[in-house]
Image (cartoon, rainbow, N blue to C red; front, top):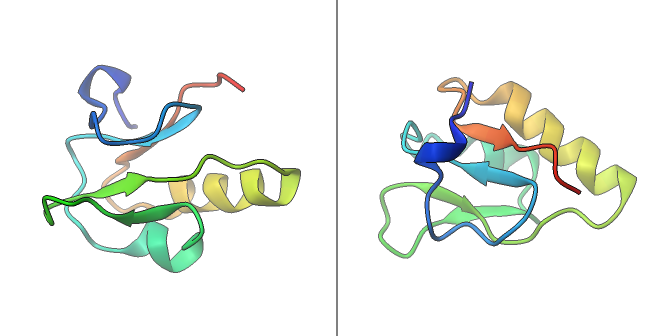
Length: 78
């Protein structure tokens, strides 16, 4: 499970985030490319756009569930 205290600072503010356990496997990007991308540092993924619709929220949740490192988190804040 992702740890909010290890949240990458380059995620946009909001509910979903990636943390220090991200190994750049691209699974989140494959599931929700409209919300995840490679960080400028090139060593992890970040959330660059928070979901704005129920459908987008579903995609981000699927990305979180599909992450093999459990590095995508949901802090529950809307």
